[in-house]
Image (cartoon, rainbow, N blue to C red):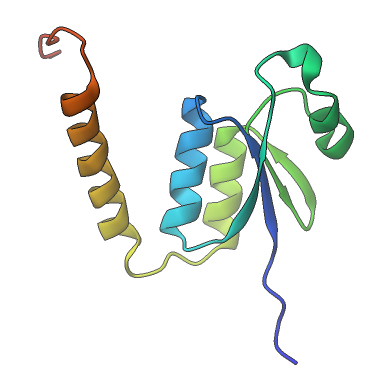
Length: 115
């Protein structure tokens, strides 16, 4: 039989910028993962604490245990996962789509360029 791929579990929320960046990196790397939505209110995060030992998000559960925080997660992925040839193209397309979304959907007044 073949090698069983690592099963990743991401504890996160949709509104969290760090969670979004971790999801983007997982997608760039072509990694399938299970998502666990975490309640907004920290007092309601009992399941997160029980399963990961963590109080904050994002948390990526890997074979070695939980990896807590965006920086630690990205460093873990960089050291444990090969970068596929299409990762850079995927990142550029995601950045372009995000800019377009912000331009089309955001009703914010234009911001001056920061130099």
